Image 1: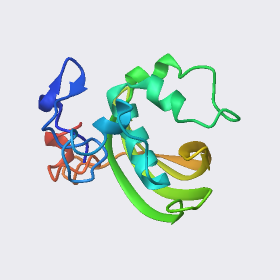
Image 2: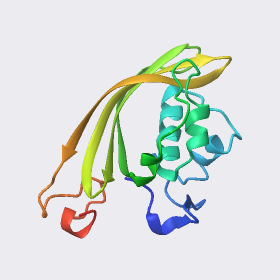
Image 3: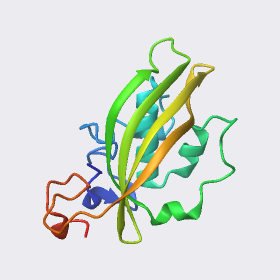
Image 4: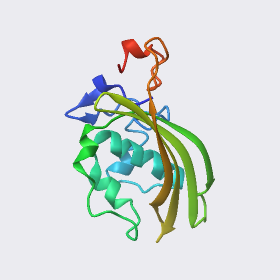
Length: 166
């Protein structure tokens, strides 16, 4: 589940708000130290979660800085500002810890744009260079979700779609 929008201050997650990455921890105790550069990600999974939080919070500088130079785009497009990220689900990880030089994280991220809900399912690849993890690339599929009014909302809030993100 994404961070509670009422726990946002000036478009940023407040310190005690749930972390947007859905880890169950607070933003201060989870992704903020990574996004502010106080610490580097210790694993591919930790980097992936922090990048998701960065997308949620519009922290494009962090997204670009953690993208491998060989595959990094010149900029993140302005369309990112129209996306409202709703939730992240991790399906699995391969490697990406300890002394590994590579890792993979499979996840689904649900989002809303222009009134429609989508789920991005991706198998992301990460590399470690000079002791730091970077996003390399990924294979992804995007599926449009149109839940019925009385179905659970795809954002993971537990509410019915008609009372949440509709």
